Image (cartoon, rainbow, N blue to C red):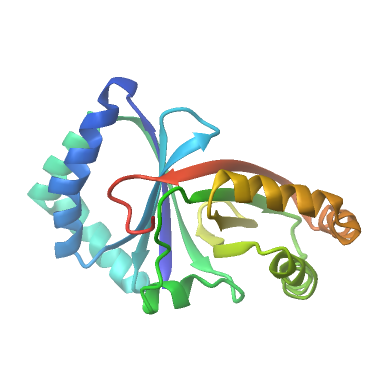
Length: 221
């Protein structure tokens, strides 16, 4: 399964209008293309007036088929023109889940998070080139066991397939802002976390984080 990560910078005055357009025009067209919108979030802490979408494709052939339709179909052209009224700019990258990502199970079993007040943390990490095997081992053997002990819930971990080289995108889910603060405080006080940060810094070149909340049309709540 492939995932496309899309980031939109929105026109501030069109903030309310885009929800109706997506719900009533864009998503029905996506359904005809067998496109699965996994999640759509507003940025809560980070870039202002920004949305992040995750769209799933069955495989590369499905992705190519959809791109062909989007470039030739008159309805797709009309929807693109309409979408451009609501956004200032957009970026996209194609990703595949890492071998330790829970996303495939979440999608296949429809175990989408539900409930009000959920908060999502997005981390985009630039990896040190040539250290892929070490990074996989570090995450599986060191980082994830620590996260599980502190109740960190992973939504997905992807590696970029088409886009920036040597990049991973993580999404972590929290029940509330209070849980986010509690877990962050607990990790900061855990001596093992200090050791893990030191190890991680040898494998990670840079990274940045933003906090997200679901849009009203997001399947993930």
